[in-house]
Amino acid sequence: MYGYQRLYQVWKYDSGIYRGDQNNFWDSDYWLSFNMNLRTNISDESIFAKREPNKELFLQFASTGKNGGGLCSPQAPGCCILYYDTNHLAFVDTIPSAQNESEAVNILRTVGGEYFELDENHHIKQPWSNKVSTGNTRSEKMELESINPDKRWSGVYSSGSTTWPDAPSERWWGRAAYNYRQSVDAGQKHIVFGPHTLHPGDKLYYSMAEVVGYGARAGKAIEGGQTLTQWAKTPSWNRPVKFGNDVVTQHYLDDFGYPDYVNSKVVTVTDVTHKAFQAYLGVDSAGVKLPVWPEDNPNHGSYLIPVPVPAPVIDMRNTNDGLVKIIWNRSVEAFTHPRLMGALKKFYIYRSDAGMGPWTLKDSLHIGDVNADDLYEYLDTNQAYKNEMHLILKLISNR
Picture (tube, rainbow, N blue to C red):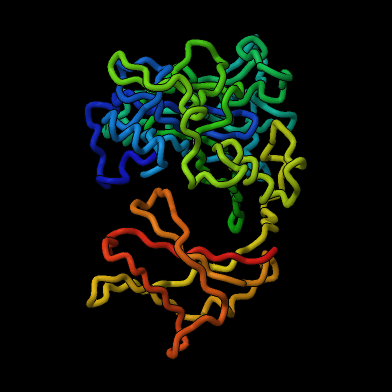
């Protein structure tokens, strides 16, 4: 649901979700669906970034990285399919008879009488449906038509409907197409598999990853974003920002850079998705071959990835003289794991005025630097610092 009910826990859009700020995208290379919040409202020109609405605060946040920088919601949340079950797909008989009144036959789309949706085993090519909602999505429609197995919704890819931007992929023909023209106001996404035939004791296996990154890989050819053509380039956050007629930057990232919470080479939701497949398959980054085909993957992932020492639980207190004291015990020193990425050596203490940063290194404590009660203790002597502000501990391990 891409967070539409996260704050309210109830459906707030009974007349439809015409918000104008959510765009959905489909990256078939990774079986990845994600949203980007590109616009302040539906009337904004799409080339301008969604920014902090106050110009002075925008410049402050953008230049310092406070509150995650000057852009509002630059993250791109989504999900990708790592594996889906093909071992229990139902046999579809394409010859109707009195004994075979197959509903599937009636709703399969054909070209020249050829059931090109079926594979050589008479199974429907997966997925069955691959749709994003429209702005007309409302509660009563969701209850009745959220996922209707009698409707294909957006049809299927075919030789006549698909112009792939890179290497043509006939393997996609007959699989559910993405409704790219309806990808604005994207509050709901579904991807449907099946139908299946299950006997007592049978189990279906699926694996998926929830992924989020700072935007998506700019310039990559994908579908969606309310474009009138099937394929378009992924938008970049290195975009112009304007207040009224005043364009304060032509290239946000060139002028202000990423906030400090973007602190690795894995930046975009595309990068994160690549890592998800890498972890699932247990291969290095080069071992993830595009386009990925989840049905070729094992039904259980490897996840042979390094494991860090977990962060300790801290107790933060105000002292009588207006200082801030944080205390934590030594339990994390005993943490072990066969894939531990390194021995715990030191605690680093960072401070920030906001949860999104920027963070300032204040001090560090080596393992064993404990007080008389065998506890780690750090006293922040800045009397202007309040307990309501954020304080964080980071663990450093050698590798």
